[in-house]
Length: 297
Image 1: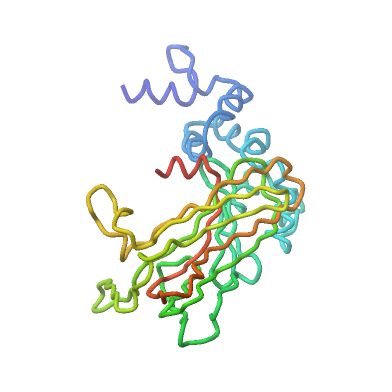
Image 2: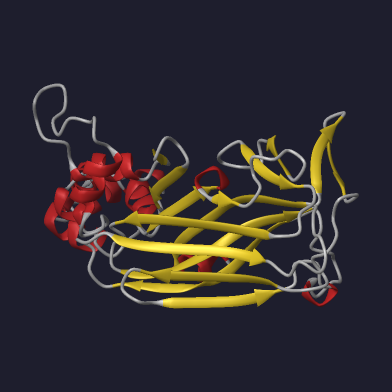
């Protein structure tokens, strides 16, 4: 049994029968065009033909966004277009580089390609946003934490006029994207190695909804209103949203031209000054392909 499997993997066996090693590399490459990058890397271990096809520029170029050269020039400006022996980088190497979280704008943003779909994802730190009252420690404080990819979140103690705005200009590859805010009700910390949350400052989010908005430079708009501390928003098992990181979807936008810079503006606000609100952590805004968001669900 083991000998037969080995013969099938490497090539013709002692009986002269065909094996996977007899399949032309070009045919294997055509099959790889329909597989995901992790699947390609796993199959590359089978034999030489599969390894050769798994390193083909023809295969990996199909996994990269059409504007990958532009993305590379923005995200990897200091990287040489050649390797140490002066040969051009393979498309597989380019994919590997772009699939790592790459810092942008002094580390306040990160961009990467999803390793399975090849779709472009972006995360924008609260540090890159304009937050009303952020410089006054009576209202806001910065909390260092390992729960954020940026290692810090903005915590609101109390304020009357709540407004967070941000903007990003980037050559997004063509597709449909979802934009969401990552928020947390309650102040969290660690005590004796355990995560704990306190809600002494958490108030006001059940009285009036927060308004989320986005707009793009080509005229697209989306908006949504949501009470952050409304019991009706708890899950089907009655679990409270307090103490958990929640992705609040703002809306979607469509990119048709990947060679142009698209400006995306986004905001969340609750400026009804009839009551104060507090006890909210603002981590980041995430922009990901809508199909990837559906898969995560």
